[in-house]
Amino acid sequence: LNRELEVTAPARGTGIARALGEVGEAIRRRGLVIVFSDLMDDGDDILRGLKQVRHRGHEVLLFHVLAHDEVTFPFERLTRFEGMEEIRRLTADPLALRTAYLAEVERFKRTLRRVCRQNRIDLVEVSTADSLGVILAAYLAKRSARRRRN
Image (cartoon, rainbow, N blue to C red; front, top):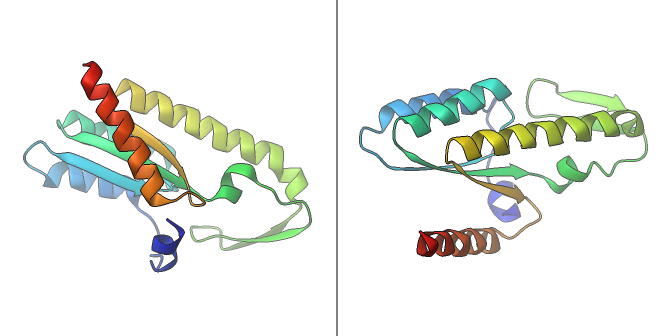
């Protein structure tokens, strides 16, 4: 996964919520919508966009991609953080931010899991440290086993 992410040039903003709305409207027949995203956009808009795509009859498979450091926040000394979204640069004491940051990440992930479960959206949490092939193979094996049970 790292290789794929390294060769991709970032855009100005993600706009994932808007993109989900457009996809939901553009696909006329029922289909499979696969999303790979860090979901760094307005949380309520993202959740609304996912629900919209699902309620239009599409099957949704969401790969929530986060960097290992975003999930573990291993920083200990004064650190200069560089963002790709609205906040460009921030120098901060990570020890002062760590607890609140990790709590906010976990809160969003819990909400995302709940919304996906309620709307029958397949959610796969992905770390950029993981191999894309391993992630896809594990998901397909899980999906195949679930279909055999039904």
